[in-house]
Image (cartoon, rainbow, N blue to C red; front, side, top):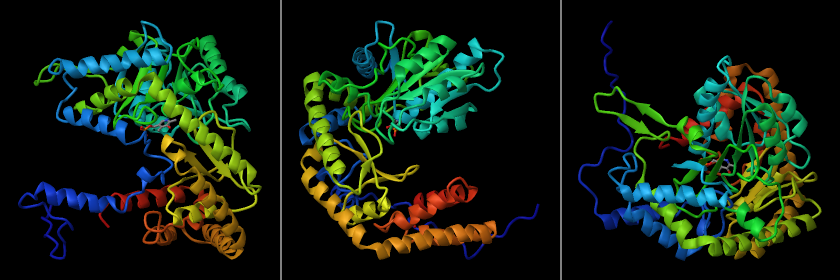
Length: 489
Ligand SMILES: *Cc1c(COP(=O)(O)O)cnc(C)c1O
């Protein structure tokens, strides 16, 4: 093969590897400056991604993290401290989710890893208990988190989607008929992220018991809110290990547990099930290798910070924080329901709200709020905005709700803008019919430059994505966009 000549026009990467070290003061200044453009979560401007319990708790969690920032839980025999703290976190969670002395689990880096492991465990379980099944199936509602689909993609498991009812909860008849001899596990959410409602876990677990299969409850976002809400008198479907048939639960301590990022638990009904999660390799020239989860090196800081959060906040503290967040959610809910142009997509079971509009373009309302500095997720099927309420939002509730009313008024007035959006959407629909596939690259221009990252107004883009939904073009567009997002330019 001919040697390729080095292309003379080839440019070096934009940022070169640093020559000398920079002083900590300068670095800190630079990083503070970088933070300047980030969403203002400390001021309650952000409705997802960060769960803020207030400065005091956050400082304690940071201190705990720093104390163990270098330690590695890959080999627990070297760090009995981490082994102890992880085991205590697991035991405290077993108690919180009403397990017994058989309940066991692992700490992971987040909800996604917990879910990946639950699915991997189900696959291993199926291999043993359903040896004739080639491709195990897992039944889950459409509202279940994409981490499950990531797991199916990684592990070659088949996901079988079932619809949800009007109230946002999994349709039981559909669950029942989706289960067949290949099914290894049923998944329910407590609550689902998109609409904030708890699936009928007891009934789903009954099906799992009847069919002698596993039942996973995804309490990633609800695990450290629902138990306290229940204590405060809120009512919703039971979801924990007190439900016969529930075999595993995922719960994120880095959400409403207020730990540092990188802390979740995957809990199992018993040790036999957890063993199916572990990975061991005994032939390595480097010695016997054993690892509980997806990663190798496991950050000690995340374990220490989670341990500190649970112990430092305690039941009393969590009840107080939950009370504030739940009360604030009720206030949001009441205001939203009093605005005729808006509706809640579902009646929330805890602190997640989805609001839509059958009169106005809800994404345009989202744009008006973005312009005012609010960071809010957009959802689809149906189009709606998503609010994750934290205790911090008690302080900004009035301001936000005023801005929400103003946004509704603005969008009502700006019918011109709305028409503009509709024309763009119609244009895209038209394009889709007449243009060859490769011409869709042109559409990138709409998402790049003035795209998601840069512009505060994205209603037209979401409209366009809606129009492309279900087509391969949307996947390509998103992949290209991700490629851009994960680069310097
Ligand atoms: C956040 C979340 C996950 C995924 O957790 P990560 O920590 O983002 O990986 C899974 N399920 C639900 C319901 C969630 O809210």
